[in-house]
Amino acid sequence: MQWIMDADMNYRKLGRTGLEVSELGYGAWGISGKQWIGATDDDSLAALRLAISSGVNFIDTALAYGDGKSEELVGKAVKESGEKVYIATKVPPKNRVWPAQSGVGIEEVFPAEYIIESTETSLRNLGVETVDLQQLHVWNPEWLDRDEWRRAFETLKSSGKARFVGISINDHQPDSALGITETGLIDTVQVIYNVFDQTPERALFPACMKHNIGVLARVPFDEGSLTGRINEATTFPEGDFRNYYFRGDRKKQVVERVAGIVKDLGLADTNAVPEIALRFCLSHPAVSTVIPGMRSLSSVEANLRAVAAGPLPNEDLDALHRHAWDRNFYA
Image 1 (cartoon, helix red, strand yellow):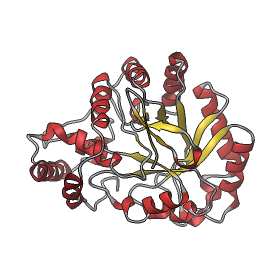
Image 2 (tube, rainbow, N blue to C red):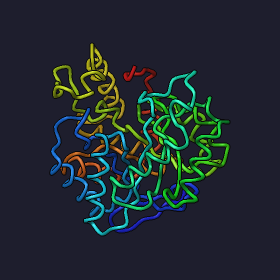
Image 3 (tube, one colour):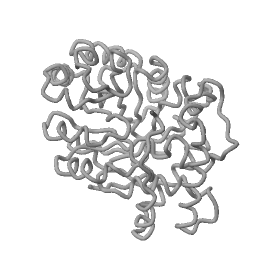
């Protein structure tokens, strides 16, 4: 991994694209107004503006985030900033099923014409003629040899509608992308990677480094578990997807797991956990950028401080590797 630095932010190469992207990227799911409840558009725009002015030059959004609302807010903030910001978005599955299901053909999920039409809609939402990175929002290795995605990606690049292409890997299924990394037809992968889900380290990250594929590390805080702010009494607004994610006794499980991290690393309390979580992701050389959601100025400020601290020392990484947790709260 080649590292670049300026006075305010560290930058890394995004695989073979050659783009120099900020270690801290901006995950824009939470500003969609749906599933994550609470932030106003003014809050979201303020957070975006602060991130951009602080050196964040990579934003990941999706057409499905608020049916284009996230893209519209991102486009507005980027245009107003006048800065060079790389925008990544995603094509939602046509059948609107997340994650991709085994046995469901690509013709039901990503017909070539649909991929192109969705990209054109995203371009209008963003107010740009070209998106820097277009991704498929789900992936099924059963589609590897199909022509639809290959033809669509070729058309997007040759027409100038997308500079680079990639996939967003299904929840907790990093090995499902091993085949496509070998094709030479994608530039990036987006994958869940955090202290609890360390599975990309086994096979996906080595493959990405071998083939020079950029890695977008998503869900670094495990949807809030690794913010240190979840306890058994925590509540979420009505309609917020975290009511499902942390249902049953899952908050209790999280509290116990986070307490173990605090103890093993000798932390004073849980307040240091989110910084540790971000620095953990950036300690792996395969990771190009980490993309936490940031819906408030305080979140942007805290995450900027965290990444400025740099990768973790080896002794902390060794301790954190003992805290991998095999489970799927999305199911």
